[in-house]
Length: 381
Image (cartoon, rainbow, N blue to C red; front, side, top):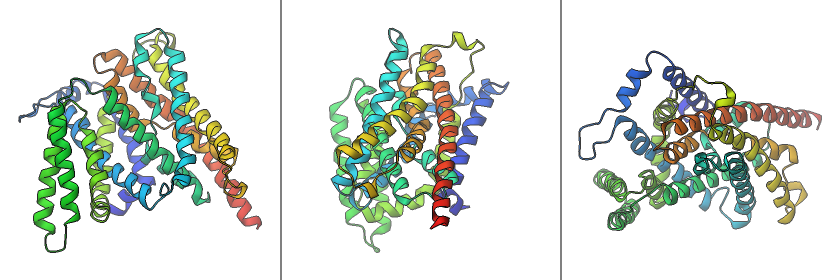
């Protein structure tokens, strides 16, 4: 079972099922009971609701694991040199700018416009899962390009969370959190086989302390997961990531997807849906596909990438469609952008689910087509 949860295909299917079940439950007679559970306040010093523990607590673990992967790619992986990082960075910029432009164009003059960060994210796990399911035979460089682009996309989403959705920041608490993160990183470098247990316990306490201080600072606490993942010594970090990966794929992300998909479908016609729904539902599949593929294609020529190393326009279209699967981070951005307006929040989430579903279908078709072409080419040679 653990090997399944560490694979790329099974967690993607699990994530989709969890979101689908959440949407069905939210529109069933059980909706009130589930909503009541999520609104329960858990006894303790923070008095967070169950829903808040999911989005602020559990999701921090996901961001920790993502940050460890990001650090690995920046040091020894796909982003280890600036030349290798620049092309997916350029494509990622197009995949952020074009969806924002489309969103603002479709929501201009309405209160929905403040949700412009929502369609900027790519769900790393889901996009790689779809590529794994449909992409047998694709060259490895395409997966590396997608991984680098998706990680950079998520980094942009994390910056948006830190900058746009953190009000009334307590600088003293934030400074305290930073000191604990630095201490966490220093202790991780002192780990040995003999000191693994006592220092491991100390690191857990430091990590919890950093999370608590970030929560108290007013900054979204998932940032603590990013900081801890980037600060931890690479060797121990990869071992911890391997241990956490099945739990993140099998519990954290499905629970968050189920919770975030608790959206009541409005009993109105399509013509009465708010602009935010249309803006997100269009910006994810159209904006991401066009932004990543067009800017990536131009970037290859501007950076004078050798012809043998270039991705074809069709390959870039497939990657762009995969980039439109926003899901996890987009759902979090929707929750933060419209936390004060339940109607806009629900329609934004519905837009994320719709746009991601359209992107998933489009990506499945394009990736399957490209994979088949590469397999036929391989047979021909």
